[in-house]
Image (tube, rainbow, N blue to C red):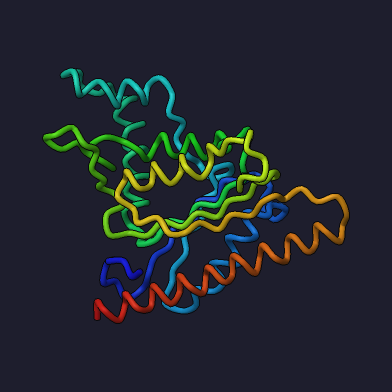
Length: 228
């Protein structure tokens, strides 16, 4: 289903890479396979939450977040940190599509990706609350979000004792920020015992991601035509 987006001549995609394994990461390889299908007219920004300088949301950042709510002005250090926080939110806002790729760690997401989320999810800047107390997205309105996720085990019901806190969490956060969250690319299980099985699993995963990329490219093209 087409989604509304800006009328920019170039569609801007922000890829947030959640794996620290870089070229050895299957989730990252699948993200690249998807992005390779987007073609001309697309500008891609790559954010590696492990390598790039992402502000750590520590004590001073927390004080900077809550201080003004209680009438406490920022100290110079808090003001410096908060400028870094808002710059990351502005980076998200400046793009039409947000792509997050991530492996599953301990049934959830890697801590570096969670740290980035803790930076960009801020009241008033990325979401607000209406008169009835409902959360209303701000930063993601009119934008598409695409998830590319890998898991070593299968969370499709064949092992009912396993609980997925990866995809539901990311989908909830992005939806709450106002994003239109597309059907995710999920690769599971990634555990394979022979090299042949591993190679086939990776090949199937890359083709699945590429197909999703072709679908996204067609969606983007349709929206650009509508906005011309």
